[in-house]
Length: 332
Image (cartoon, rainbow, N blue to C red):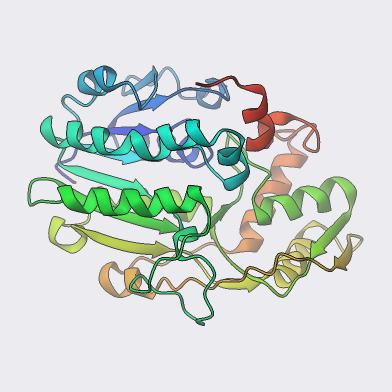
């Protein structure tokens, strides 16, 4: 068992966080969730009474709060951000204040207070559009939007603070897919599954673009492992974490194979031909980590959730779509 006992997760009530927190509790960590809870605390209804769980409604820009809550923490997993380009672009100043400006003070406070391990969720979008068959961690970063530029900036900031006593790890995840208690239906596999299940029709824009994806259970397994890998294996490292790369057409066919043969596929032209293939060979070679779930597994998990009425009003409920929720929330 790792010497890490107390873990604070920023943005822990989000899409990935809400699937990660139960796993951390199962591993007997003391868990603090620091989140604005824009989507509510209901995502933790089944575990909220666990003695090792503390829910903190707060803002990562509040440095006084960080100084209190980072005390006695062994590790921080930083997931919080205004996620995806459309949500970010609604209020660029807000996005910058949360995604970039808050980052260095948070890292400094964590290091000053004795946090020993800091895991940062960056994004594979930092690469921009690449022609290479395998986009590896050593390629030049060419972010296309402020959202991805700030992710890249934070990677550089974190690297400055890396030391033997402050172990840092940066992950560039592929697009996450599958079911969680705080479900997002604005991510490629989940979008196609939602339309296939509800409308029995998938409209594919273009189709030949490659997209890397990773099952949410594999993504959360990575974060669990990030707490136990030896310092010398991860300190200052950057890893892509993804599964296989498929074209949007191939993903649509996988969705259809799980949801039903009656699902109609329609392909229409698009001006957005961004295509990229992320390689996760480095993390497998260095740490032996390899995702074990498929896109079909993610679609099946979503299908079960529909059948169990865990997903309702999925074409219209704002809570499933970050951009719609951000349009309603008045953050400053």
